[in-house]
Amino acid sequence: MGARANPAFAVAVVVVPLALLAYVLTTGSVRAHTYVHVMAGVLWTGIDLFMALVLGPVLGGLAVEERASVFERFTPKMAFLMPTLAAVTIVGGITLALRLGYFPNADPWLALFTALSLLPALALIGWQFDAFGDRRWRVVAALAAVGSGAYLAVALPEFAMTTPAVAVSLAIVAVLTVIGFGVLLPGEVRLYLEMNSADPDAEAISAIGMRNAKLSGVQGAFQLAIVAVMVVLRWGGA
Image 1 (cartoon, rainbow, N blue to C red):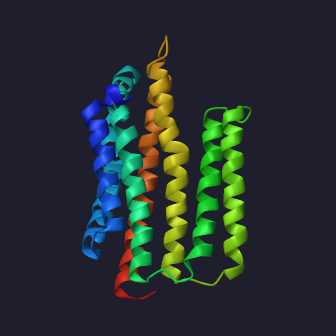
Image 2: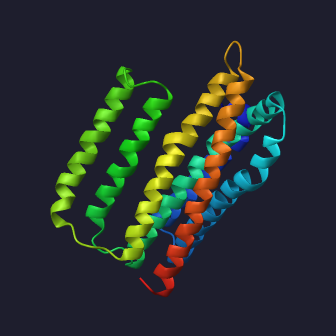
Image 3: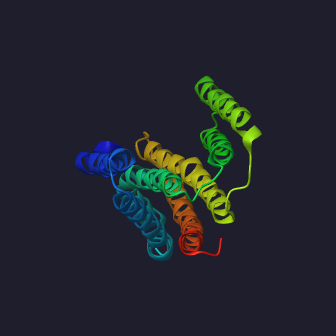
């Protein structure tokens, strides 16, 4: 997939954001941390909204073969760019809230967030690839379930309410994580596999691509909602 995306592009859009995240998590200032989180979020949200509001309708007016041709060029790049932006935004946001003291009683809430985002995402991945009978998926799912369960067992006894804005933010981010990593990213992998099959099915490529474009609109709506929550968190009302 990296070759189809252009290796330089694939490396840059993964390494640069992750390097910036590593920097702000270790030695960067609060200002730098805020900048990385906000800019990653702006790009993530903007691309999702562009996909849903501009690209999706344009592609909807094309013939199936033309749509498939666009997705064959577009998908490999998105498969590297969007998960990276999502991860940097989410990790950067949670750690920034902790750093600024906006996230009291964090451990139990993070344990809940981990379980409610990781396990459904894995279930959706298994469903999309018909992998419930695959030993590799079962091993990963079992490890995730045990790890999440252990985290919950350790953290939940200390459960206490956090701020309403943070609770709402975590709920929205959990939904975004499940959609992004449980549906959109596996869809892009399925597109890639179909593109590289012996007899690529233009109908399947077009259908998965259009589904992802529509789901990008759902993502964008949730992302706009979380922006509103962040305003409340930063300037009061929570």
